[in-house]
Length: 176
Image 1 (cartoon, rainbow, N blue to C red):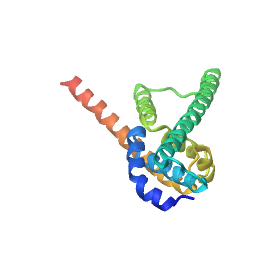
Image 2 (image 1 turned 90 degrees about the horizontal axis):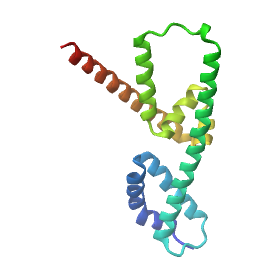
Image 3 (image 1 turned 90 degrees about the vertical axis):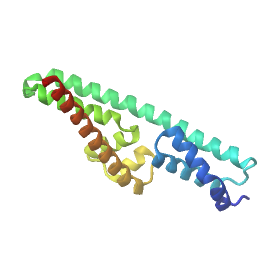
Image 4 (image 1 turned 135 degrees about the horizontal axis):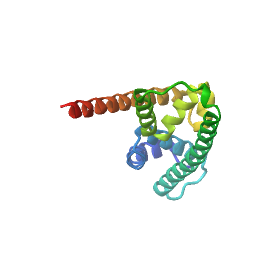
């Protein structure tokens, strides 16, 4: 039997640093590292500790990427259905001004710039899913959902504001 506390002390910082570089998101890296050490608790024998820990972490990232890819395809299908429904009932739509179209495009760009997990969390919350349901779909702890949503909202607002500022600056340059 191995000492998981010793494994954690010895490899946690290195693993999180590696995962942060790989994923580009420290929070996500921490979650993957946490799950890796949870799996170490369940393991009776670990022969090559360092390689086992990194292999498990890489497998978790790969599995998560596959799951996200499946979810993205599902969301794309749902979006296509909505577009089809909107095309079938155009008389119910209000007139779209150029400003409204640009704001919608900026909002869409800001949303698309988010990390996949953050985007999914926001979209599910908007659809009325509770924290437990969001956690289950995303494969994260229920306690992490609030942090994920807060981070996603902050990044969405920052990106949207940056896009608006960029558009304003282009407008000022075009006017001069």
